[in-house]
Length: 457
Image (cartoon, rainbow, N blue to C red; front, side, top):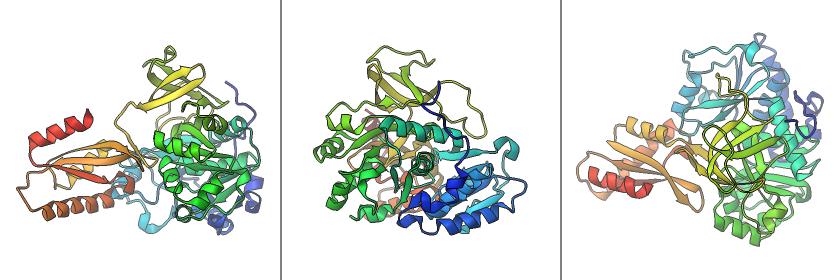
């Protein structure tokens, strides 16, 4: 399978060195200084040891990543908001030669379980996936894979020289890719602040050339901000992905004539790999997506054998933007099973149904309920617990914990204090999205089993 047109295998160094030609917005302040500082810091890494970037500031984060990529040194993206457990998991796998980020958010000094050979991993971009309440791991990419995804998106939407508005965390693939798209397609990256946009201030760039990426929870909140909605009506496309949008949200977006482009993708595919164009969304067509030019997508059985139209099965992907494997293991070449269930509604039209595992997607973040259960039990405050995702109008799925404890009867205020202790302990251990928003108490083990059965039915 050939990409729609040639893509770069390395970052555009000449353009990168002139940030004023591709970077703008209130969040871009300080990029030039941070980039120069990163280049100087990387000069002190003659062994080309892996670089870990965990900056809180988006401009500084991008400066560290792009400066490292430009020097063909392995770069590891990390969330500065990981909890103690997640940082320890990361540190057990990779010891950074160079660290970009706050010392307080640094990784503990642990003996790594496996060394990273700088020569083997040169040019690699390790993007975190499954690090929210789950075992931290990285999908291994390189500039060629992320550039292929960026070019395919521009070809599919038939847009060049766009302004890619970024208000998502840049340590996520969905936050990193707007920068790649800007650099690869002659566009501009507009870095803005989500909190200010959520508060009612639209991005300062003219909307006519803008493409913005949102998760459903963000779009839901912005629908209450008239000025932002008026700005969104005029953009080229609103890439809506990261989680399944609920019907009510899509109906309201269509009523407001918002140019939503339903996007399907994941870290392993360098974000968007299939999409529904805004014009099809506005015509009221079913929420089905088509593969971008660089990809082939089908629904198959466990061995990737294609199933008949309208028969549900596993979603398989083959694309130029596919990752090389989860660090440090290499993935077998060829098709990859996404872990999602889907159905081919008609030739070329994919409908995504649900996850095939227990992973919860809340506000665009993946949460592994098994790891959250493990950390709740580690507090010693409960005897048994089951974590699940339940439908939620704002988050898509709400993380819910049903627990049973051997503690005797106590006043209601006592249960409130217990649950507050659980929340406090988990905030120190896990990323914020993984902390359950709802706690359901079972007074006895038979109640616990009943509630689990009822919630899972």
